[in-house]
Image (cartoon, rainbow, N blue to C red):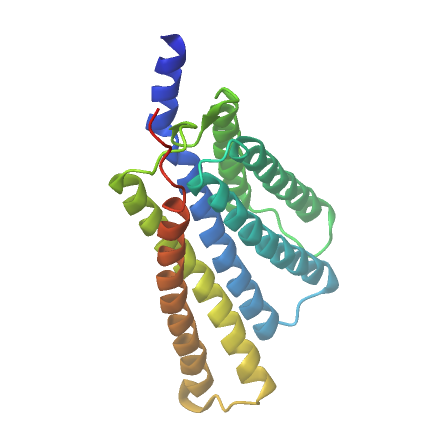
Amino acid sequence: MPARTQSNAWGAVGWLPVVWLCLVMALSARGFDQSLVVMQGFDLPDAALYLVYASMIVAVVTILWGLYLLSLAFSRSTRFRRAFILWQLTIMAFLLAKQVYVLVAPNFAFSIEGLAWDGGEIVIGLLLIFLVGRTDKGETLFGSDQRARPSLLVSAIAAVLGVVVGGAVGAGVGLAGGSAISELTDMSCFEGACGYFVVLVGLAAMLVGAIGGGIFAVWRVNRRKPSAAA
């Protein structure tokens, strides 16, 4: 009976890590795009460039790693717990390293806002690690590992998350690709022509990513076949 109670409790809050995962991925895509804009619009010192490059690399890794975690979550894999904890610890380690670098490296000014933002992300990460770590090894994201076809509600949640994540990733890739194309082709920026082109590419990629993400998420969740009757 206690095991059933714990399983029900985990099923009630099991969506929190997935929501946080999608939010961090969306923020990473936004940060990657902002880093590109900063690099193109400002002549940054070397110390700042190193941080921008590192942030862009971490953003890409966060998104790709996050997509793998989503596949584990939607397939109800018992490996999600350990993989999520490792993903979250890696992000927290980078945030701490970034704050230390900002304090030590030249050409940086201490920012309360930046410290509060990173500190809040670390606190939320610790809470989710605690939440995920309290589950039994036999538990999965949405309850016990019963190998049954998910309900309509789970499919709907997967579709929404797939649309959000796919749209965010598509927008980030589209904006980055549009910026690169405008630079490589020496596109004219008269009356904001190059800017409109970048935005148009970003919106098109966001639409494609949202549709593809929603379809993939629903397919991935419903790929499992219901277990045979005893």
